[in-house]
Amino acid sequence: MRERQGRVAPARRRGLAEEVADRIRDAVFSGAYAPGAQLREVELAEALDVSRGPVREALLRLEREGLVRSAWHRGATVTTLTAQDVAELHSLRGALEHLAVQQAVTYASDEEIAAIEQTVNRMEQAADEHEMVRCDIAFHDAVYAAARHRRLEEAWQALRSQVYLFLLTRIRVSADGYLKHLPGEHRELVAALRARDAEAALELFATHRRHAFDVLADATISPERPAPGDDR
Image (cartoon, rainbow, N blue to C red; front, side, top):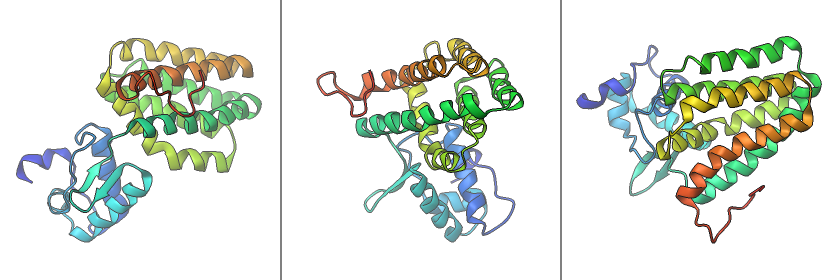
């Protein structure tokens, strides 16, 4: 894997599958491995300076997260979202986020609202689309933390990698206006949370989700076949 060694940084501790999974996940999130890219155990083991065992275990962990898919004739690849995947992620994310917003409006402290706003400040400094996606995910991490609902936050963590992949796929399809408009959208979301206006916040969050979904729906779902969970 001489030509690919720059894609992942060497692991500091040998044999630690969790760290190997973190390294591979970070490489996917940074765009080093695009959807559909093969993840070969031998090459990853060489790049990470570990044996194949931790790599194999790490790939299984990432498969459980939905970030990797395996097939007997292809091995492990970064997940490519289908039209059904896009629709299911959109509807499930909407259900979780609806509750998270209601909870945050009711229970979040002023300090927690300020922490959410700090992620928007970082958005305004984002140098590229991948950094913006990281900030977008951090924003939603902060919203779920502010919801003060442990099981809800655990449900979000179970879905988080797939939502990250959803947003990465969105910028691959079209990044037009992404850097320019996203911080302003999130400023509006924070303002609604700070005002404790549940109705406005729920509507704004739904519109925000819809923007990303529409980009992917136009690319993957035919107009004659509406997506399941479509909340228009």
